[in-house]
Image (cartoon, rainbow, N blue to C red):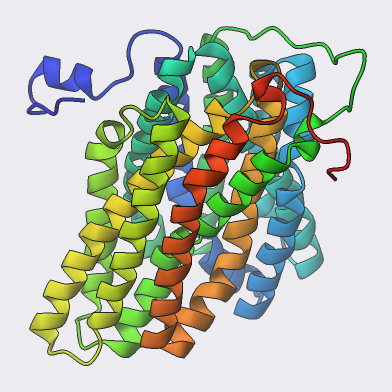
Length: 420
């Protein structure tokens, strides 16, 4: 993607997906993530200041909901293969809108747990089905590129939505919080209905013989999923580890946390598509994931180096760390899409994307514990452990992807019968 001044129509066209299914997908994603941006900074404050829950109760409740959500990916993906992903995703979006609106009725911990758990199931299921829909409506060469556009749109939507949430948060009243929640609920429904502009994908009947879910027997794909889950811990690093590290272990001003997030958002919006080039080939995608792991490792070293420095030096080091981190993040994300799509049989994209999505959900669930233990509690030594973890997972992904490309259903051979 060649970047041109945004004031020129040609430049704007280059920032949009090519004409076809990618455009309604991008518009739906933009609407949905605008709503996410409204809710993300609102949820914790609404639950603590309006509902009256403690911070611990909120954390435990979200963890329980996340655990339930990670179990939804594979069944949702399998169902998408059987009935078609578009109609299922529209339904899941509408249901997610209903459960999100139900947050406005929460007045106790039990009702919060119920609503949050159901909402997480619909949300996680929707993520898996969305990837299957992308695989179903686009040729192999366009899937990763479209995912990159969608991620750029996601960052833009969340940033704009979060800015809008600031208006409601300024009033700090239950009415303001409920308004933001209901607006988010509406965006789910509108985004779901917007998907009707995407072509319908014909369902794939279940093969008359063989296992119901071959992905669970595809050991090589499961290994790729596990390694990607390790790399995906970096999302928790930016959301949790870096803000706490800056505030507690460096002399940099607290506003530098917002600057790090700003660098990440802007870079992802502008360059995610460019970084994704060539990843329709699984070997190149795995190589890009390896580069992402090594860059993430380097960023860990830089974040660690910001400790015990003057405020000015810490700011410079943090700025460099933020740039290296976002380059690693974009590389890892693009590589993961190429590997996930490229290794999955076309007739089973739903269940394969479902298991891959579940692996990502596991990393999001474990990331807070891993990051706070290593990066925050252990200090510099913990950052170095994280660096080694990212470097090792990224490096291992190349030979494991090579193994996966030559084994299992994708290579035309049945998966090993003794796999779980």
